Image (cartoon, rainbow, N blue to C red; front, top):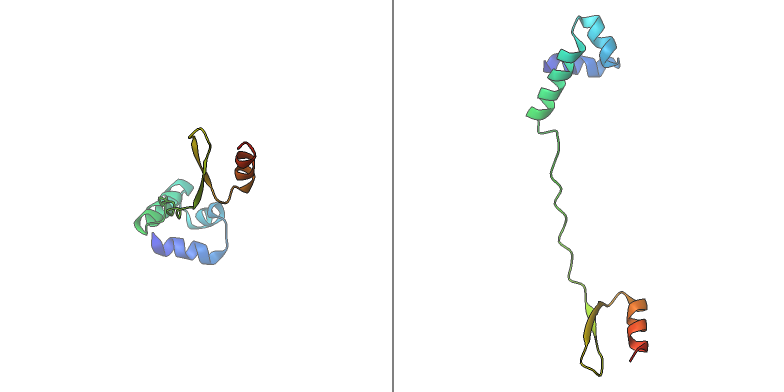
Length: 85
């Protein structure tokens, strides 16, 4: 299987053309490729998001005791919250 697939890759032909020349059914050839990719670990790889770094927050405390924490990078929201004081 692997030798045949390697020959196909080196030939520059489309799968269908190569299979016709070699007398291999396209479904069999596709199955071989799938099996080889699975054995090499080529397939879906789970993606795990990187942990987010802790963002610094600014805490706005109103005279009535209400406390709001806002990301320090959100300057527009901080400005609006302070204007209500």
